[in-house]
Length: 319
Image (cartoon, rainbow, N blue to C red; front, top):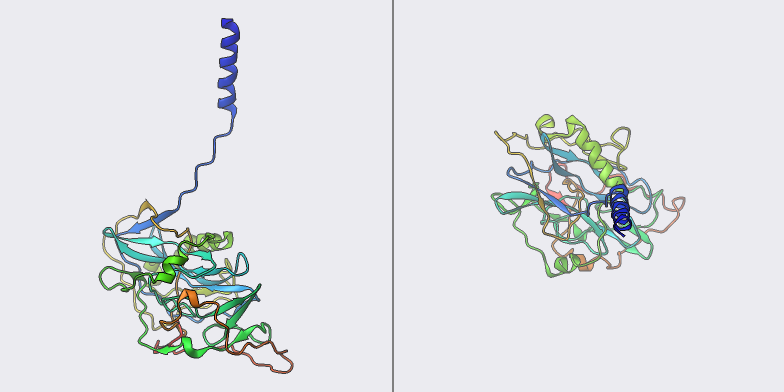
């Protein structure tokens, strides 16, 4: 009896020892830093590579050597009807905390940051979904209408403003904005975290020393790309010379990882040079019908909008 019990216990122990360890639960983790990010660089938006790609603005992320720039890029939406809510840095608890972006049926709160090209601080004015087709607003996005025919022009999202390139919400000098009721409702939607392509895009930026603000002084030479992970070639655009110089703070403390207290997921954010949304571009208004959709064949109407309306000095913005 004792031998049988001992054999049973030894066999049970062997099973536990040989069994693979369970994968750790994935916990949404945010980054908290005691130094605010540099101003958003000014850069031209690369042309949209193909139908179904949505613009995701660039952002300052935190790495071993401080802030580094993750270029804005066009990303294929993970599913029809989903829009990108950019991440943002927000002041809270004595530190700047990163609230990562996510995909969802509505655009949520992204700190009131003016990332440009349709992301003017509230909602998204760069296009809308019509069924399974994304329709682009060429007033604020760079689209070749001889290739992509589902377009429209809505200049009501453009307004004359003094462009603010501050990259964080709250704190000294930060953007003063709070979530609207629609943005709060959007946070309760079902979300999808950043795609594998977006995560890889950020990893490439992190591995490039020239993307760190301490080296590029707030003016990254790779400010935006036409596709995730493509950091060279014709689809790359650089920041413009009018960006403010970056002066790295002395004795910048290391980042602390803390559990994220939000519905955001790990991902990216940023951009300022083109037109930006007016305050009426609330996320709940995304499905408004575009004024004049362009579905004509290019042979009949060879319109090409390589340069949406913008002012390189930031006076007129559709961001």
